[in-house]
Figure 1 (tube, rainbow, N blue to C red):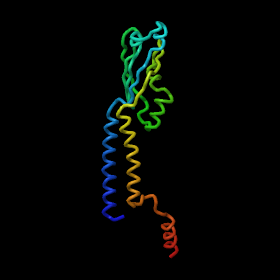
Figure 2 (spheres, rainbow, N blue to C red):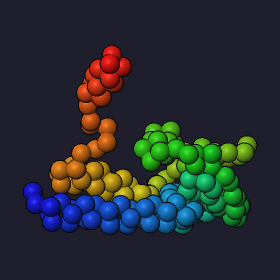
Figure 3 (cartoon, rainbow, N blue to C red):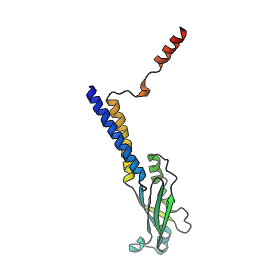
Amino acid sequence: MSNQQKKIIFCMAGVLSFVCALGVVTALGTPLWIKATILCKTGALLVNASGQELDKFMGEMQYGLFHGEGVRQCGLGARPFRFSCSCGCLVMILFASEVKIHHLSEKIANYNEGTYAYKTQNEKYTTSFWVVFICFFVHLLNGLLIRLAGFQFPFSKSKDAETTNVAADLMY
């Protein structure tokens, strides 16, 4: 590969890294990563709600890595609530697993709720989550591009040659 091609690939990787950094900063600056619809299961079962009556028992919740807000409804009107998340330092994969496997939306909806039980109807990741997810893969692509251009990573140098020379120098 010629020097010109190596420079072009390296510059492309640099631009992609810069764009990813801007994307991640922007995504982390937005407060909402997950939108969820919650159902007041206890209230809906009490009155056997269906159709338009069921809407009186549906609430919404939105949250991100650091805080969130929502509205609980259990037939008696909307009750807004706000909360702080303690998962701000988690990696993307851990955040996604916490949301899906451990039912984070349900835990948040039922936090400090003694009378009613809320069940998650649906959840969807919003744009902020997907921007960070894509930036992660672009970062991996950058590493591949740099390696393809023939640049050696700093940790790929052999340390055996250096220690042999030092030992030989000490003998004389």
